[in-house]
Image (cartoon, rainbow, N blue to C red; front, top):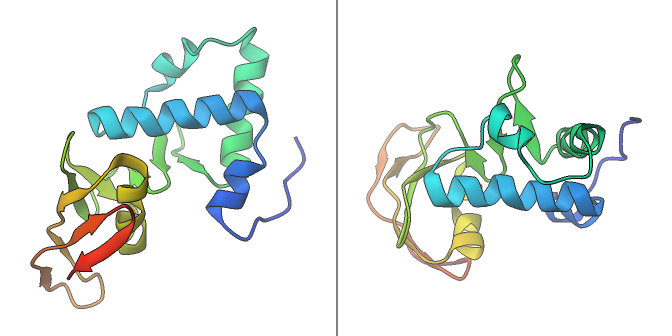
Length: 144
């Protein structure tokens, strides 16, 4: 698969996905939102597609467009805005498990994807000082 031209944003990258890659991307994001973790490679293998090649191609497309990052074993380590690895930014949605964000900006975007953020205890990455609270609703920061 040839490398896709770099999009200006993750939204543009997602909008340009093929239908199978789009469905796979949504499944990965839903897994993070529902469980706080990405699906494993074994779980991805059970994704309903017509054949394994279509799944492999769709997954490669997500990685190629930088919507999903994988480790050396092919396991998902991030699906922006979610991080499978602990980060300094932990987000607690009003419903569902706490999830780690790749960065503070991604944490703000989570409310647009999964509903209001109830609490966001985290750290300012450059100063390592605790952020007391972050309240967001429909992607809008209401108090910091």
